[in-house]
Image (cartoon, rainbow, N blue to C red):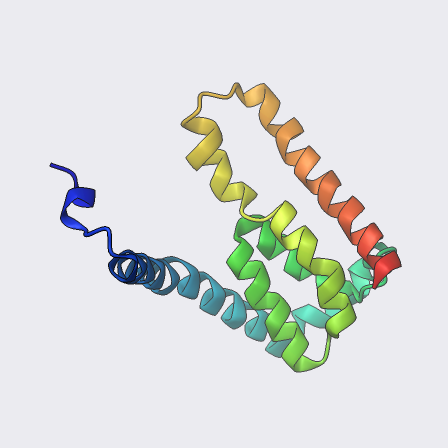
Length: 155
């Protein structure tokens, strides 16, 4: 007998079961990534690494109307979308990024987010030949670049 047979058809019961599952996902999966990203961003800032990254990446990120430090949002988003969001919030609270920069970065976070995790979890399980992996990753990054350019014009 499946678990669904134990849940009544009452919309309130269905909502409560879904809310519990969502809460568990948020606490066990999303929150640790966001917290880790926030701590890493703070450490990079305290050690002065964020300023070095900002100077090195300023010309590239300037194409999108962003400060050089915004590259850290994209790099962490590549590892985890929630981590990229955490770094973006950290940089927003420090005043490094403003609302316009967040608007430009937001689509990119989700278009290329979590690719490192997806390589093993999805592409490996689906038996996608490894020769196609760089192309699949590249398309997502290209989409993110296009989205940031479009958002720069719109924002």
